Amino acid sequence: MAKLDLVAELTGSLPGLSPLLASKHIDRAWEDIQAERRWSFLVVDGVIICPVMITAGTFNVVQYTSTVTADATASAALTPYIAGTPLLTQLQIRFGGSSTLTAGQIYRIMAVDQTNPAALILTLDRIVVEPTNALSTYQCYRCYITPPQDNFLAWNQIVDMTYGFKLKLNWTSGNFDSSDPQRTSQGDAYYCGFFRTAGPYGNSNTADPNQEQGAPIYELWPHPTQGRTFYARFNQKGWALDTPGATQPALIDNQLILERAYGWYTYKFAQANAANFPQFKNPNWMALINASRQEYKELLTKAKRNDDAQALQNVWNRGHGLRSGYAGVPFPIDANFIQGHLLNF
Image 1 (cartoon, rainbow, N blue to C red):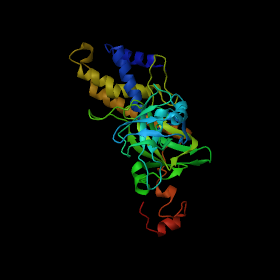
Image 2 (image 1 turned 90 degrees about the vertical axis):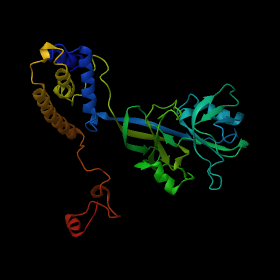
Image 3 (image 1 turned 30 degrees about the vertical axis):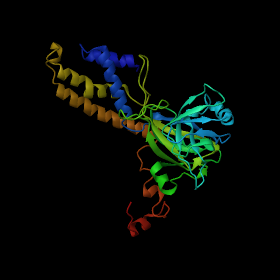
Image 4 (image 1 turned 180 degrees about the horizontal axis):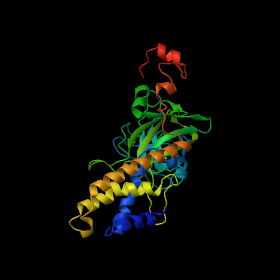
């Protein structure tokens, strides 16, 4: 059923309800339903591109400033990414290389000034702490990635398409700090860990012009420097029914959306405004709210069951010991082993 029809049914069942408000109730109900679980229809695909590391030329670096200037050779090497794939503002840069004695910090490129094409000026996310050096070597590559879509929820898998293996997920940059604080490990990435969210949060923080506020940023480790294209599958938060003719997936029954709207928004609005609308005075709104909420739960259970039929969701987390092994003991193992050993998962 199109959104326009859902709105019409809502206003028809409750005379006096504004179509604009009814549309808002449908929007909220649909958003709530999408948040109930990781529905199969919310799984999408994407691509993450990490180019070969760029090292040609040098940079003029001034300590404690947030801008650096590339020489003609470095500018020529970086120029294709200004409007390329990925964008230069999606790459990171460090100065002095990654040797254990001179490991440079990693800076995100926030903006590019190409007024002089032979001397690009990069604005970084913070001040450079490396010593002033007019001929500083550098490494420019992509170790921080962002989801392919703004409404991203969670990764399902990231696959190295060159060598055909899945990256290990559910890590953090803090885990990488424990084993490689200087980020000297480079080459092929095997892990993906949460880094931070794009700001700002508070008046003292600088806005990130290249990311949606609050969007997650992830770190690949070891840092990929060889040039890799990753296939990504992930769950999105959902989408809006943003046109009158927009429809929900066939898996979601029309009545499920309506009952969510009735039980959580429309009937509550009528109850709160009974004194302002004569037609809202007599019904027992609390009974109607409870009835709609019960009907919603039953319809939601049915929708989840149908979703499991085409893409099973109700299983133990893949990180659980009975699926991934525990203390070096691989599973599956037989019931005799489980009953004969004390395993704390």
